[in-house]
Amino acid sequence: MGVGAEPLVASRRRGRVAFGPVLGALLLLVGWEAAGRGLTDAFVLAAPSEVARYLMRDWQLMTRALGVTLGNAAAGFAIGNLAAVMLAGLALIWPRSERVITGLALLVFCLPLVATGPILRVFFGPGPGPQITLAALAVYYTTLVPLLVGLRAAPASWFDLVRSYGRGRLSALIHVRAMAALPYLFAGLQIAAPAAFLGAMVGEFTGAERGMGVLTIRAIRALDVEMTWGLASVATMVAILAYLAIGALARRVLLEQPPLILAASAPPGTRRPEGWVDTGVLLVLAVGGWAGAIWVFDLNPFFAKGPGDVVNALLLAPDAAETRRTIGEALTESVVYLIPGYLAGLLAGATLAALLVLVPVVASTAMPLAIALRSVPIVTTAPLVVLLIGRGAVGTIVLVAVMVFFPTFVACLHGLRQAPGQVMSVFDSYAAGPWARLVRVRIPAMLPAFFAAARMAVPASVLAVTVVEWLATGSGIGSLMALSASLSDYDVLWSSVVLVSALSALGYVLVGAAERRVLAVYAPEQLA
Image 1 (cartoon, helix red, strand yellow):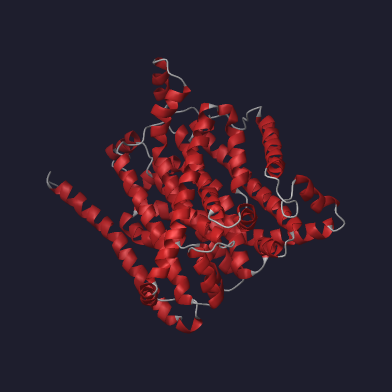
Image 2 (cartoon, helix red, strand yellow):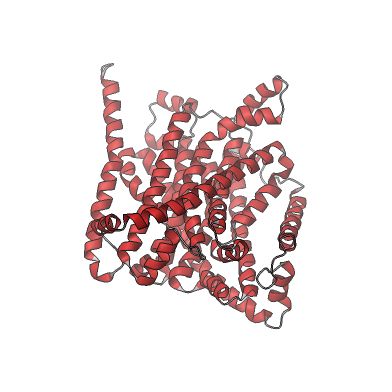
């Protein structure tokens, strides 16, 4: 092949890859239109042509609602991500505090939005407070986890250089860790963009006066399919534009190849001796902060239940056995659907990310569908999807898998692209094929990002199953929490919140245990 032919071949390859998303979008629209026309009598899916007519007819109403929700989501997005950056910086400057900081952050993130929304509405009253708070709560942890992974993804020689100039942890954080963490930060921001919009809409479900969530309630109650899918389409476009904008910014900023990180494997089974102390401090701070917040803000004990109230409701009250049985049955029903959806979402996300590396043209064609699946707010489409598929296991598992799929896909895609340039050059010299590069270089480089996504996906899957049960199936712990809030049965509501959060934390810990065993071999710098 001539010298001038290689750039021509590369240019054609890039052109085919760039055409993939356009083709995927066209196929998605054609398939959607055909499905919408075929399901006209089912009243569960509006075709794109019908959605377009609705948006042109009621564009002023949609624009006003979008402005309100977008403003709340943007405020929550900024607050949540700023909190994530500050917490990650504090954890790196003061390593002794990292377990406590991440533990408290996890406990807060595990609080189910279905239950915290009504509580925040009582606390804030009218106004945008619950919407902004829920948007911030929905995003800060999805940025914190990959950011902590990225802050450790730097070669030890860089830190030796900083120390040789007599600089300390703060200089290393600013000049070394921050630059190494940028790819992971952008991945977290791309995951956070749809989550912020979803959080704001859930907040509007709790009694807001304006916004996309308020229109969604109106559309669901009126069985207005065109309005429902119009709202879902607008929300999807906003999330996709935010995803693409963050990705474009990342491509302009991230110009250097990922560094080669060499570190000795961590001895298996080693644990920090102060781990039990950190756990005790975490529990004391969590329980103390919970009780302290009720006391400081002088919250009405009718709805604000403290640790003692929950213990009494679950163990000491005359109806404690009935309360435990009711919550236990609801939790069991939810877990049966949650675990298959969680595993299916992880597998689908990692597989599509690997496919994008192996066969860029085919995978890029599927990218619009992948982004759209996660960008559609689950609060708008869950009732219709369950109505179409059924109230049984399939509908719930599919929706949980969709919620888990997108964060896993984005994190794995960024992780696969962190393969060190020096190692890839060695494989180039041996004319290694795409499969060899994937198995021997890219997948090991992806593992920290994959496990970060797997940990984040635990609370996300809990959110998904509770929202589906709340809005569509009428069963499980999500339905129980919504019913308890509507009946002002705050003993059951707060007890359910505590047990759901504990379940989420337990799943997170189990994934973390598997992560430590794998990364001790493939990425020991993450365990430092």
